[in-house]
Structures are given as structure tokens and as C-alpha cells.
Length: 141
Image 1 (spheres, one colour):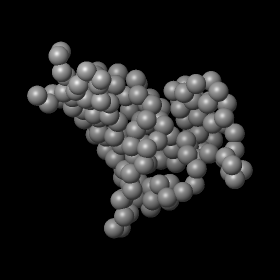
Image 2: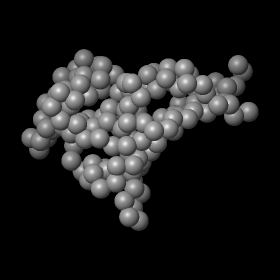
Image 3: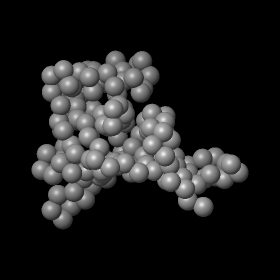
Image 4: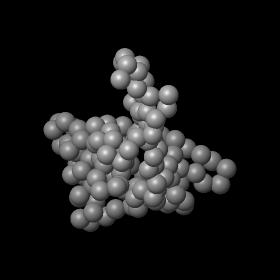
């Protein structure tokens, strides 16, 4: 049976995961891409580079974010959030870097703060959620 996750379960789940899928849409194009994220105070934080997803979100800031997990013993959990893209600069970008790098290893954190291969700095953004829902199936619970 599919069960609704309560707000505490959703919060714990989002804090336990590292990879989500960001969906954006402009005109006739829809784009879904996996990203490493940090979760804090109702927002997803992401570091990335210039590219299709950033260009699309600058044009249409309404996005969807999905995180899921399939359990070895069977069952799954999934959270879907609707939200608004906000590109970050200054102290907000520094805070985003801190939130995201807390989610990954120390080696990865050092590398994330460096310019990317083309010498460009990372782009920091957050998705300020407007709606968050979660569902799950538990096998043997």
C-alpha cells in the first residue's frame, strides 16, 4: 500500500540523501537532470556550471525537484517538491557552498570550491519550495 510521508519523515529523508532530480520547463522543452544537493530550511541548494538547466531556470523559475530511494528489501520512498529558482551571489552563494559541501566528502568539498575546467566559478542557486509531498511503500514493516 502506498503511504503518505509526514513532514518529519520528509525532512529526515531529504537530509539523508545527496542526489535529486531537477525538472525545468521553457516553451516546448522540458529538462530533467540529476544534481547533488543540500537541504536546509525548506530549500534545496545546488552548485553547478553555466548550461541548459541554468539558462532554462533563468527564463522560467518555476521548477520541480524529486528525490527517491529504492530499498534493498523492497519498497521505496519518494519526495516531490515544487519551488522557485533563485540564483545566489555574495554571502548567499558562500552559504550554499557550505550547505552542499557538508553533504559530500572533505576531498569533494575542496574541489567544489575551485573554478571548473573552463576556469569559470560555480553557479550557486536554491530552490525555495512552495509545496513538498512524500510517499512510500514499506515492505516487511
